[in-house]
Amino acid sequence: MTRLTLGEIRHCLEGTIPAVIATVAADGTPNVAYISQACYADEGHVALSFQFFNKTRANILANPYANLMVLHPQTVQFYRLHLRYVRTETEGPLFESMKAQLAGIASHTGMANVFKLLGSDIYAVQEIEAVEGSPLPTPPPRYSMLSAVRRCSEQLSRSTSLDEVLNAILATLTDWMGVQHAMVLMADPVSQRLYTVASCGYATSGVGSEIGLGQGVIGVAARERTPVRIQHMATAYLYSSTIRSSLQASAPDFAPEVDIPYPGLPAPHSQLAVPIVSAGRLLGVVFVESPHDMQFGFEDEDVLVAMAGHLGAAIDLIQSATEPLEAMATDLPAPQAQGAALHIRHYPANDSIFIGDDYLIKGVAGAIFWKLVRNFVEHGRTAFSNRELRLDTDLGLPDVTDNLEARLLLLQRRLNEHGSLVRIEKTGRGRFQLVVQRPLTLQEVS
Amino acid sequence: MTTPLLSAEMIAMVQGGVSTIVSSCDAALRPSIMRAMASTITADGRLVTVYLARKQSRQLLQDIAASGRLAVVFSQPSSNRTLQLKTRQVRSRKTTAADQAIVQRYLAAMEWELTQVHIPPVLTRVMLAHDLDDLVAVEFEFQEAFDQTPGPNAGAPIGAVRAGEAT
Image 1 (cartoon, one colour):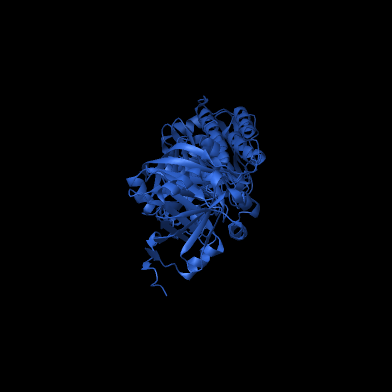
Image 2 (tube, rainbow over the protein chains, first blue to last red; image 1 turned 90 degrees about the vertical axis):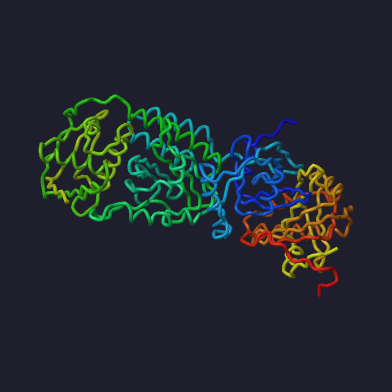
């Protein structure tokens, strides 16, 4: 008989059916306990939730051998895992992803006030034993995961702009994985926040809405740079519960309190957030969610991690592609600005921009917009290059990883949502044009 | 020998038929574990019987036979109420026709219980599938009892009273 691997029984470690652990005290008294969470840590280790200072805890510290019984939720095959306790982690990616997952389990089982993760107990798996029985056949996968990765990779390879790259990701999620609600957020290394640049499946796009590092499933995935997956609704991780404190601290008193509403589901039951990392840097997060329980398994996580890897590389490639030094006049006809003037206000305190009474954007994207419209009003310029923005020290772009493409895309999308009177159109690699259909009046509000 | 006195509620829970996990250990203090295919308790709450499938529980039955030690957890999935009983002395016997009714009643109870937590009966039947001839009935009176319902009191011992003193 071939040896079973942990990867082969990973379905048993999804928390569908609670695992049970047997340990033995130093005096030879056995003990049995239910484990809220038994997770796959790596091919040689499982991580079990440590929530209480109980008999199991005392036993493994005195005698590290344990026997864990798990059940395959689809085939109903029992497995026994012969384990040896190694260590307990109380922080870091594994701990944080288990903590988020446990919050879902706790809410789902009515234990929200009882379950709290004190640590992730890491056990080495010494042997996996399939218990004799009459298991059911393994059901076929919901979709071809490798095909989904392939389609995504193909679309990314063809993409020449961040816009296309993000569309490739969202299209793969909806067309190949059956995901109905998704967003991509980019990280701002200066403000330590994430801002939405693309979404699908929501009533409003939420482009420009922000989340702080550590807030909710998305923020924890970004801060810890680890996938975070919740299979049931986790009250503690709902956006509404985590956002309040940061809202108050987001802007100084003299700047208007402005925020684009977060578009996410009001009552998500399944969520999966995967960090986008390239060359060791956090670029953002890909996030999917569903109003139903248990929609995203570890295989969906595998697919999303593979997609996020490609996405990170694609974003970096587009960012680093050679850009022309100067803006160039284009063949695009410059429309005549006529009709009633649009009044544009700029608050330097947080670079927030209002067109008329409507809030448009803030932060670096707001500063960029202000530079563009000032150039337009003062010099009649409409053609711009990424490079000149990058070289402008007044914009507050970080040195190396300025994410300019993402900020321009964000600005472009916010302008499109606002209407078509002022918009940005790409005119070539690293070049774009400001299209203005009304005269502009500018006001700096200090 | 002392036997902790279980509450009428706990006795009713075990009699009703709930998830039952059995554990023992070998001389090297390595634990063994398996789910019981059925379990029951006498109305006075003193004698417990758990039914183990031989082909699923070889090491466990061997350890029980050698050490007499047993820890059993009873848990009601819908309420999370959990009880652990421990003993140092057991009696194993072959099943008889009288056990068949107990095992069948247990299966029906578990189908209902697990339906409450959205596990369909077809999966419960596969989980508890066995040949009656393959079952071993392990009977014991327990010396220790613990309330293991998740929460701050989890693990609290249930007070021991001398046999005959309970009224």
